[in-house]
Length: 349
Image 1 (cartoon, one colour):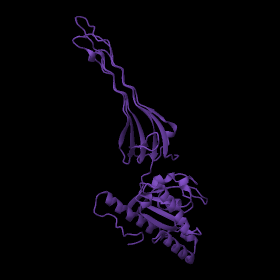
Image 2: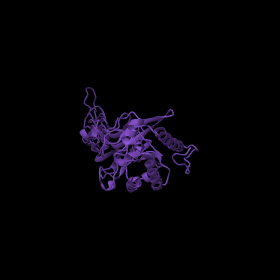
Image 3: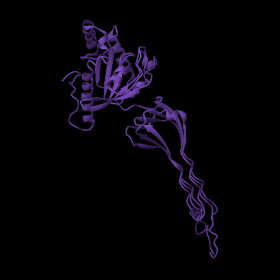
Image 4: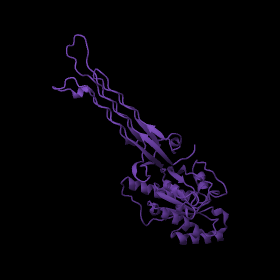
């Protein structure tokens, strides 16, 4: 299934049904009178977050959603049936924006959440409503009110606990494939990953979700490479795992390039806890590794971890550090008194 994280959709709620003009004409009934029923209400348009979806690809093939019109009223005071609702089913983590793609309508972060995007029109009154002592045979009824119509944007931001960032070919997809059952594309050329991917990692009988996004290059916030729009998928994460490849001649510059793009992106991403890792450590010898670890430590201002997905060196240590930050954040979200210690640094016991 192809990944799609943004879609433009036209929606329209149903019109209300028209009221009826009708009179009772029955044998042995001397004075009939009006008996026109009201029209039914038009259907609403809802958006609902459901489990089992992780892409908006369905909205590439269908962009128009219209609720049904309410049925017209009928004689014998019969009210028309209400129109059927239209429901847009989207993945958890979907945001809905107005047509300007900036004004947020709703943010669906949990399965089962629903939001009414457009209300159906009310049905019109039948002529029974207009009966009075001076007008005992009204010959008028109201038409139903029209429904609402608008164009909206659906934007998906994946729900994950940890997000992987780094330059292209920093080993992000290899790490994801090593610690989860995900099968991302892996190759020795830049921008192998073109779409975000998710995987569930397990360590010490505990699980958490990892999101992998395409690599960033200098100028990504201005559209260079694939750009930085996929950074939205790590906005909701609790911790960022920043991989810097040991193959880089200047690991400090590689680290600062990605940090610069994260800070330029904004949205609070730069303030998230970050674990810095020297990845693909098996490609350099001991002395070169020590030199690059020192350069990375100076650039990041913290002690980096060492990782080799190929040999599994440091994999469990990285997973445990990620799990530690995630559990502290989960406890804080639950209102526990175990908020993250601001003095904690990745790699510390």
